[in-house]
Image 1 (cartoon, rainbow, N blue to C red):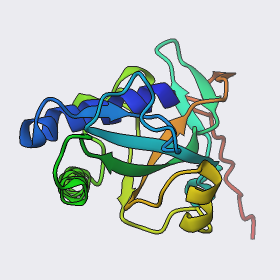
Image 2: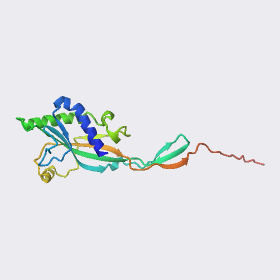
Image 3: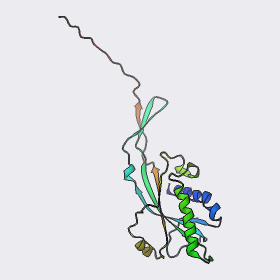
Image 4: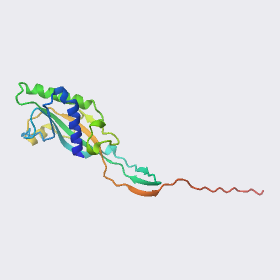
Length: 199
């Protein structure tokens, strides 16, 4: 499911970003450490590093989903778990560029515009298990991430500090099985008695 999210985000950037900044830009999900880029990635590149995955407890629901079947039976199922995937996005200009900071900031700005355009991921770019998810996949762009210290983060990776975009997507993870509950109640019979007053 996380791979489907990666592929969906790559598709979104390919559709809306590459026509603006050029088809030579690669989309990467590698760790942006001191050895970036890996041999599989050619610069320039936009890197989406998934650094945190956690349940979004604010969106947790305890209401069962009840489905009526054509044979009159019903099934119950617990709602999907809402999971927040947090990415740290960085831009990596070509090594031959005469002005790396300017190219980096330009690429990052174009990525930012694409992400801000979509507070919900569009259905047309969703891949695999994410297609037609209900509810749709909300995103959060440019809000504080879960990292305590960017300085410590870069130091731990052995890389030089870079400008980053914080980006979150909330996906639904279906982990529960349906439970058959038998035929539903269609009608019931009520009997009324009238009380006779013999005064």
